[in-house]
Length: 406
Image (cartoon, rainbow, N blue to C red; front, top):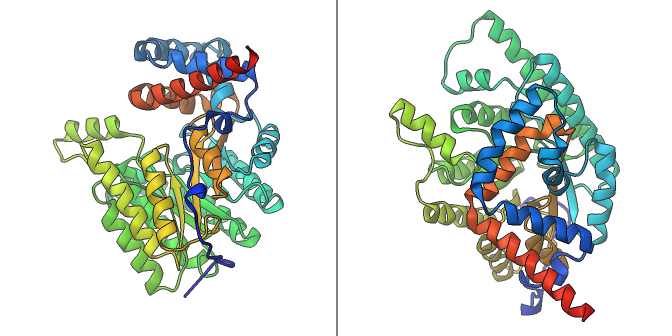
């Protein structure tokens, strides 16, 4: 049986289970000014028409090189850790003081040619080096395939189409970027999470991940895949990943997410008159997500699990099953992760219970990170329950603080 470091078994008590409703813990690092700002922004996000109306204005401003801060300044401050990796370090140090670790994420998405993708790959390598130097703060590095790969090329490979000579040259450059990232990570002993993409490009990503797992996951999970559990084929793919790791005597790592492209997936399928790759029911997505956590936990001897969710019930499912299996709350093979600026009530409650928590910390100049910020705003307005939850928790903490001043 493989293990990564010591796996301490403890007797968990009810007191150690996370309390998601203690806003004093959730917002302990926010001063009154930050609290008011976040309350105001999440209050505005309750009105989807503001985001819908503002999106084209932001894109026009970007094309014309107008200042973006009047449109995105407050959202930028809430959801990102700064313009550069160096600017993100103080945010990481502040989180570490609360027992929360960080995953610096250079949030550049597809755009530009190979030179731009090479630059993104170099930035990812910088995060790997920093992770190796600050292991007490950074447990993982991460990259998004479309940041260092041409999505059209990934799509063509996923469909099994033959590449022409020019595309083959581009594929070699793409492959070299991935290889160099994982080679450095293996040398520095840093695990790298590979974010997921749309279903029509994901097959090529999965194929690359399996290939690099064979090369780099013999001694530790250097290569960690991301499974979008709103896809109806991902439970089967999880079984395939586990079997692949066992058959080849490898470690495997899985980050579990629900998925961020539901409407886009449906539009793609409808335009081609094919069955969508995603569940049409949130209930089915939730069930698949929780089932995946259970399957993964039963294979913890070879898996590293990253439960990346803002869903309280899924967090409870995993913490309960850890308790039932007598797995320590701080077992280094199990992590919980939320995005910077969101679900602090989950992150800080878990950290208070000594669970392993790593906040995703996106960083980049505002023009580079603009697509990410727009998507965050759209997701928060689309998942209205989540926006209302953030708003109500911030409001509750604001009222609690006011009561102390009376």
